[in-house]
Length: 221
Image (cartoon, rainbow, N blue to C red; front, side):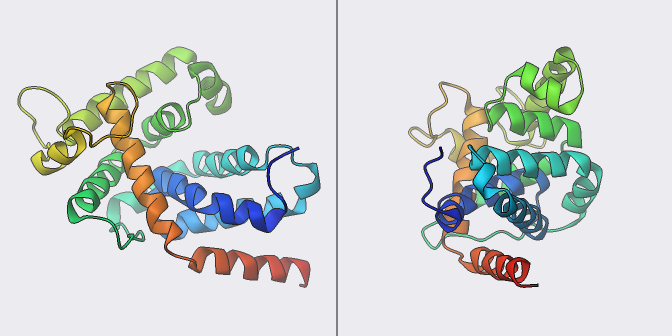
């Protein structure tokens, strides 16, 4: 059995991380909230059957974005980011996180999808290949292209940095500034950005209120 006492406990303990990961996929808070709420509502209907509810909701959200990747990509590219910001967030942290999000949004949908599945969700190439429906070699190729492009955009390469942001590079690579992932500064930058999003969503109770209202409507149509 899972670790949650009931469905509400599950929502309270996981919703900020779910929303943050969804924003990393789609780039827009409204789309992220819609996808996460839909997945939670589906999980509620199957609650008694779910042995790993968090993994189930994560997979449901991820597959929705995979199906509609082109639409999310076009929205991301033409709209400003609207994400909650924690009161404890420093201006340089916010600037770095927003730069990472905007840079991720410049990647083609397949590259972004593979990048997040491997670097943030820790999936193997084989797991990604099976879920996405491409070869293991294609997973590696898409990941390499995504990493190369992001490294340039974020100033995480050596030598000239066309398009790189020196402020962002300084924040992302300062001593002690990265949550650990070995010496992989790019993965650490992605994780740092996701952690920044989590803190923002933790300070905003509105998505949970909307989800609870939707659950009441589902129980009493």
